[in-house]
Image (cartoon, rainbow, N blue to C red):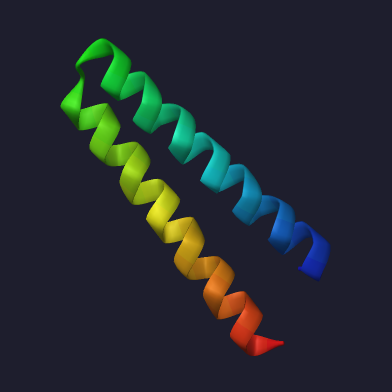
Length: 54
């Protein structure tokens, strides 16, 4: 997978996580909020690993 595709995939995951987290907060759905937070954290870790590999 190219670096650009990896970077875009990570950004997409971060954005999806943020949307899920905010939606969960607004609707009072704690499960969705936590899933979004976890997805965002996983994307951040992937981003850090990707940076270290370069």
